[in-house]
View 1 (cartoon, each protein chain N blue to C red):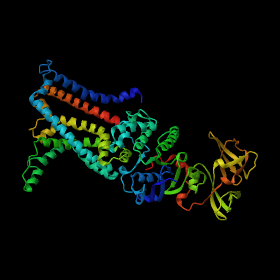
View 2: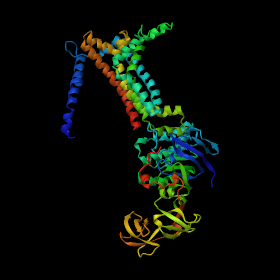
View 3: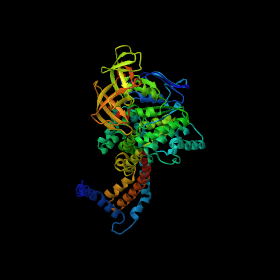
View 4: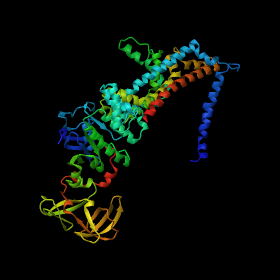
Length: 367
Length: 273
């Protein structure tokens, strides 16, 4: 793995008595795309602001490139931030916005002009030098904000929900642009979002946070396929989160139905959480399967159908499949042992299952 | 709301405007361009260039200019301090600053007269301490003091409003790009507050320039502003034609200056949007 660039050491932070970060430890490496992902109030934005120098931790240290930067003000740090609401200087032209950091450093005028042109080209807005930021669309303004940050050639680019204010189509386009930019620039990106799809699409490493505590660090595949606790499983994607009892290694009982799995080391007859992704539940119209159930609803979602099946074992499964099953039909239900994910029951409050409905709406203005 | 209803609602205002704005202006204009016999003349308007009137006009312009600059210099630090302070503290400070506005402005000027007159509170304190008394009242400085005292809130409120409405992340973005505190002030806060400064200037400069009550009370009739001369033409000399002519000339000056500020403000406010 690449060289370590940033290290958070035992960072704790509270605001007016509310603890936002609880002894957070995190390493970020050179040229890594790290996403801090979590619901509103999980501490991800505070973590980013501590790295940017806008908040001071109550205790702990921030190490950047081997140096302790905990008490360094933002203007002395070798990193730049892209803010959620662009934060462009509306009294300046696009070119003056981009040149802002370069002028402070006393860069030569001709060099500045070249760099402005280069950074505008990178974000696909060539020739926009003399425009006023207020004459641009939201997506264009965010590109200018990105250009304004990257033109300073920071070692790390911090992005605080930069796509949060854009509409869906634009957001998806910008995700690919950000990946491309990161590859072209070869710098570290630290990205904050509450949108799990964004995190999975762009990141090398996803850091899932809840209530000021890191729940899991891993690649998008790890986080999706091998969630370490019920919170992560529930927050990332949709899932069937079931109560189970681990009969012994490789056998779990769900609602009295014993299902083979591949997990070991959870003891015998221990209560566990079981995660089965909706796309991993297999239905059979002929009734073949480990158990049976009745289709209670079916909704067309474009790529797949989303089906709810009430099973004989008293559990309603959420199923995603490309086949159509009419409501009321009797189907067989089975799950491949590899697709059953076993997790320990939550031992701490922050690992509790998160209410997905809340995540869908809140969190645009987390401070 | 339908059209006839909104027309009905506007009737009181229309009567007000016709009675107290349009008719008086027509009256003043007609007086300004005629002599006492009713014959057309430009003499009343051009009288602004008579030495004595020119002197008063220059005095009015300079005192108004100095007062306006002082108001800007006083308002900005307060606005910046208030921006950084906690919300409860903010409302207390703001309340104290606005409090004088609750008092009649002539009363405030009379109070100021008590403070700075030759046998006033300040000079009594000075002599009590064994110091020589100072000549405060009946100076241009006293008039400026009165103008600043009276008009400061009209500068403070718009300046404060525009300083407070600068989003925090814009300031953070400047710091992030390498600005220190002074750079943030000169490149971000001040340019983004120009809209408020512009409205403040109009609200302080225009009344200061046409001021005569403050000059009467704190200037003791020794310092002639154009406003005083106009007042005397109407009340003492009873030369309404000359008074109107000078008024119209002053109005033209006010229009020119507010046009200049107004243009600045437009540029600044399109920037803010």
